[in-house]
Length: 298
Image 1 (cartoon, helix red, strand yellow):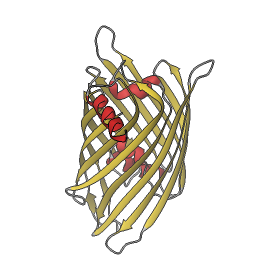
Image 2 (cartoon, one colour):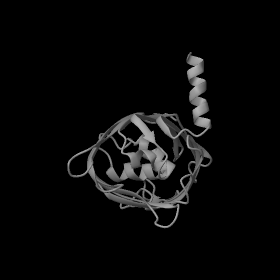
Image 3 (tube, one colour):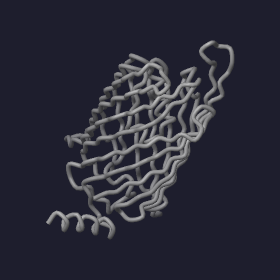
Image 4 (spheres, helix red, strand yellow):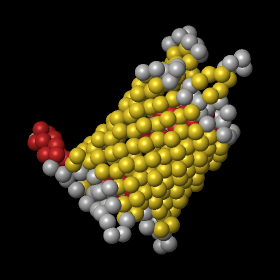
C-alpha cells in the first residue's frame, strides 16, 4: 500500500496535479570573488501547507501567496567563507511559520522564524554560534497586496537567515546580516504584490523591503510572469554598512516543467570594496554568484 501511495503521488506530480500540500526546494550557488573563487553553497527547504494549495489560477510560482495558505517550513544552508588565509564553513538551520487570518476588514498576516548558524573554522580560527529570532505582522490591504512590519533580534553577527538565502541568494543575505550587525535589534518592513496584466495572459509582481539595524538597507524587485509557467525577474539591494558590499543587483528566471516541478537560475553581482584590518590596503571582493534551483510539489 505504501508503494502504491508513493507511485500515485509521483504520477499526479508528473501529470500536472492542480493542488498540492508539500513543497521541497533545493538550491546551489557558485561564488566567484578573489577570496572565494569557485566556492559553492547548498540549501534545501521543505514546506507543509495546512490546506491544499490550488494552483489552477495565476502564476504557479505564487500559488500559495495567491491562495493565502498558512504553512510551516524548515530550511538548511551550507556555505564557506575564505578571506585573509582563513576558511570557515557555515551551517545555517531555520524554522518558520506563516499564518493568513481572515478578519471582517482585511486578511491579516503573521510570521515567526528562528535561525541558528554554526561557524566552523577550518584554519584554526575561532568557532562561533549565532541565533536570530524574527516576528512579522501585516495585512493584505488590497487583493494580493501584502504590507508587513517586523522585528528581528540577532544575538551574533554570524547569524544568517536560511529562508533569505533561498529566496534572495547568499550575497544579499550576507549584506542583510552585516547591516543588522552583532547583538542588535532590527526593524523590518516589506510589501508584496502580484496581479494580472489586463488584456494579456501575463502577470506582474513587485516587492520591496527595508531593514533598519546598526545600519540600514533596502531592496526592490519586480517579476514578470510571461505566462503561468515562465517568469523573469530583476532586483536591487543597497546597504549603508561601510564594510559590506555597497549594493547588489540580480536577475532570475524560473520555469514550471509541470505544475508540480520547476527549475530556475539566478545571478547576483555584489560590489565590495573595503580596507583590511590594518587599514593599509583595499580589498577588492566584488562578488558574483550563479544559482540553480528546483522545486517539487505533491
